[in-house]
Length: 198
Image (tube, rainbow, N blue to C red; front, side, top):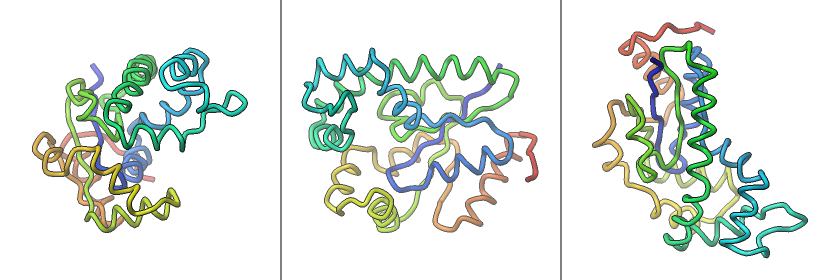
């Protein structure tokens, strides 16, 4: 039976970079946010988003993700409504992906809101990626070309590191890529996962 490693961390912690390290070492990786983005373009989901949030979020049938983010990151009820549409679809997608990767002992399920969504309960092991708050804020400002205020309001909607860490089996402090990669190697050894040395 394939074991699921849940990989999570607050916005800007660099969890996708860590997921990539696992991928390079031969562990299949499912990035929930990326898959959710694709799923949000499917007709069924588009129709549900229109019904709940309104047509104004769409320009030529294309969802304006920035507008939607602005709505949900400032209103937890709206965020819950969106999650109720997206999460079941992502869960279904992950289950079929898992079937395709069932010959592996372990797979990575990377999700920003692993705990908030309750999906951590489906994981055999949980890894939290953390970094100093200022580092995280800078990373997100540079990556999303957004304001400090917007980053902070998104952080507020997520669990705090202490809460995540208290429910995790491993923690990777991700400030220096070299040491982060060494942490990944260490975890693979502890879990006895064979690595592709690339």
